Image (cartoon, rainbow, N blue to C red; front, side, top):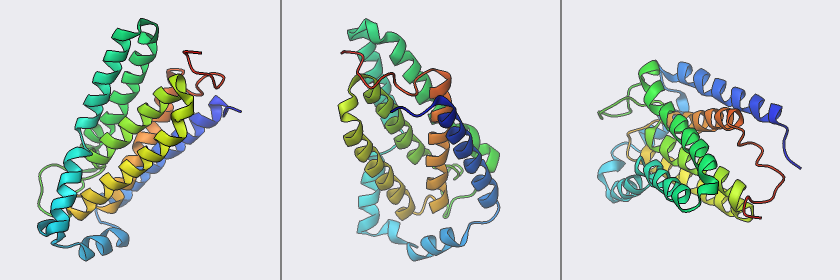
Length: 207
């Protein structure tokens, strides 16, 4: 049974609002959670674990939305019947990814250590979460049997990305939480506006 569109809208608004409230709360002073984790991991970025985290951060980062964008383009060219779906998914992907680029200058949060750019929300986590969100939508429409497996992979990838950024000392924990809130909130709102939620009657478009 599909969730009514109104509920998706409410959830989207609530998550987006939570993202903004959290950002305002931590913009000037980090939470105790942030400080505790940052102190516990102080200097770890220069150790072997830090090198592992850097490798993970290189893979799970801003490159992923471009890879998915290219895949959507290839799918649209190969199967013209899916052109409209791919265009709408690409719009959601762009809007979700923009949450980091647009809101970092709004909150002006400093990084835990000296590092270029602002901190809230994490651009890397936004990239992974955006890619995962749109990938879930794509599977829901075309390959619904894969949704649960893809959802698990998306959660794991997002958590790993967040952990890597925190271990590297370039983001506070709440930067990563805010990234997930922003992507999920904006993703749900844009997907509702573009009639991507809920994805039909449970059958794939190929059936």
